[in-house]
Amino acid sequence: MHTQPPQAETALSITARWLWAFSATLAVALLISATVGLPLLASVATGAATTPGRVHERSAELSRQIAALEARRLMLVHPLSGSLYGTLLAERTQDRAWRVALNAVQQLAATFPADDGGAAVQITQIQLENDSGSLVLNGTVRGVGTRSMTVLAQFSEALQTLPNIETVQSPRFQRELDPNGPYSPFMIHLLLQRESATL
Image 1: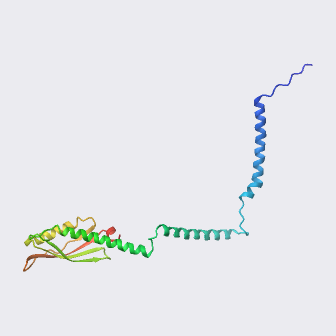
Image 2: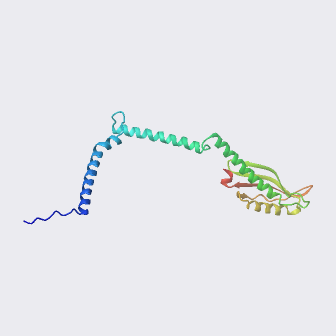
Image 3: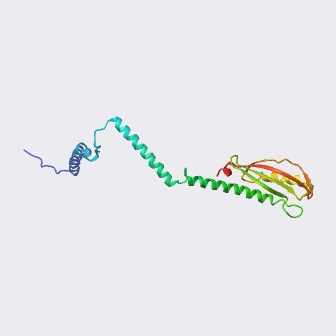
């Protein structure tokens, strides 16, 4: 009888045997960890048995607490919203917007010279109407002779070119006479742009 000598194990069969053993060990370890280890590590103790209704109540309570904390945080980030200081600052800014508009009007009026070298457009009274966001200018155009109504019309048109003026209500054009010569009285209503009036 002739017997064959045992063949040497090939590297492939050795690798296959090791991979099978590793896979089986890994599968057993994962099965044990999923059934025993994971529930121990991932469980949360609530302290008492809860019902679904209680869980919803607790969720709503936590949502209210989160909303209150976020509002508190926003007050720290934006301290002006809804506070007395914010209201005062808004009024101060609004006053600044009025002053800017008033300054622009006064500078424009100074650009119209009288024949004697003074200012032809003389603003004698300024009223601020906070509710409507408008300025009311009262004054006269003097020192330009019979051109007083023409200068008043030019001043009225120039007011419309100012950047923070939305509309200009044209004045009544009339010429009157006094011992100093002819003049044109005026009352002009200026409606400021909303962002200027309510900064």
